[in-house]
Length: 296
Image (cartoon, rainbow, N blue to C red):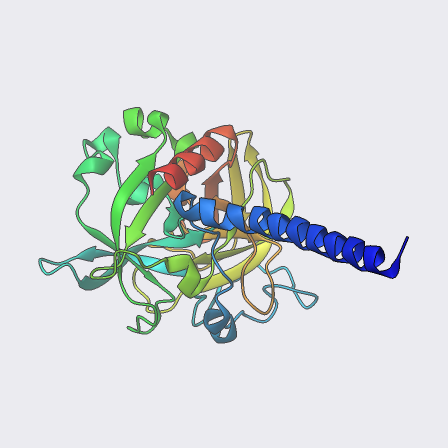
């Protein structure tokens, strides 16, 4: 074969390789173009909120200790208080329950107790609830991440029918007035959600007593009260703590972990500030969570 023929073959081979690479590049890029109608991505790390998190000493990490006494602190970005809204759609400055931002593709789902938002046994279904606001990170009258309006309330059919205490869990969808595309979880982070938790197990619990301006936190053992109810013993969780998160695996830097319950259930969370209860996070709660994500 002559040098001339070799040069021709070399050029043909180069053109062939270039063509293959070009086709592969188009194939690689196509999924990104085709994904325009796919669900939004999971919440991004809320770095600003992470740096602002003030996780109480002893609540998480290697230094975590068990306690029977709740202590006030400045709160976590992903945990907040529920307020009634006034005629203008803003807070009445009276908080009555607690909620937690949970992980979802939509970024606007909050977990709380069902009895905070509906009481069918007393003739008040969720659809008739007064306008409610969720204020994440609230403390001392401050609203560092704004007010978020509850737009949808999802409760289990068993709760909707008769306020069955074994289903005292609700998920709500929220939105920000004037910013319909805002994603709360991108602003404050979100707690993962876990189901069928082990008991007994060390957990951290947070609640907003209605007569105080700071949340209370405590770390102790979540134990079995009944097959469908869990118990947590710690002082300081008075009225207003309902819906407060029960968390495992909390990161001592960000305050984020896994939600395995909310204060509620038996006696709507307990009739004293010293003993709290929670409906077990089983298959029914898992289905309700999936419904909330789909409805958002």
